[in-house]
Image (cartoon, rainbow, N blue to C red; front, side, top):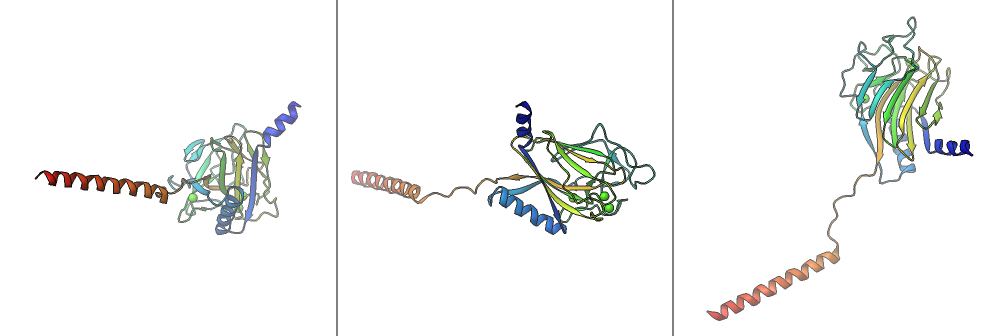
Amino acid sequence: MLFLSFAASAGATTITIMSASSVANADAEESAWILSNFGSNFNADILETFEGFTASDQTGYSNLSTGVGTFSVTAASQPGDPTQSNGTKKDQFTILDSGDTPFSGRYNTTPGGNNWLDSNDITGLQLTTSLDSLIFMVTDVNDCGGTLTIKTADGTISSAFAPYPTAKDGNIYFVAITSSSPIGYVKFLNNSTNDGFGLDDFGTVVDPPPPAPTPEPGTLSVVGIGLVGIALVRKYRTSRSGARV
Ligand SMILES: [Ca+2]
Ligand SMILES: [Ca+2]
Ligand SMILES: [Ca+2]
């Protein structure tokens, strides 16, 4: 019974991984997913595009505070392969752009942007977040023999990306994670030290506040009656004061 209870708890989180043919197609999938899972009143609120960071293939991070939460290297992570990887070969992730990336197939997905967070071929990356819905884009998964698995804090796991060698250089996915409570963390676990990926456009699903309410007809008529009443009182007072003269 305890095991069943735990399984139900894990089931509270859902990981959706959708293959896309282009950035525009991935954006369209995102909109369609929000519409079908939340409704037409809901929107994507993109919290981190990595455009506010300086892209560099020389600078790596073990921890990075961002608009969507803190990214960090997991305890069990391994650095990029010292003989094969094109990255820094340190157990750190990087922020890259198209001008300095040493990798093929990972790219920015932000309209008008340049930067993305790159796994730098390490095997363990983690995002800590208090959000209960998380959406983002992933590029270049599994194209060099690796397998990427996404795991959330409650034990939910998915690796529903196309496997090597079906996976092609430059592939792109829209990923959505929803939970009945704060997700806690999302781990990106890769089993290859020569096959990384890019992450971009992290956001959440929001229900925007409705526009400021306009007075209803019933309210208007009450206000109108009030104004007429004030006008009548003023007319009465004016005629009374006029009568005194
Ligand atoms: Ca970006
Ligand atoms: Ca690639
Ligand atoms: Ca790759």
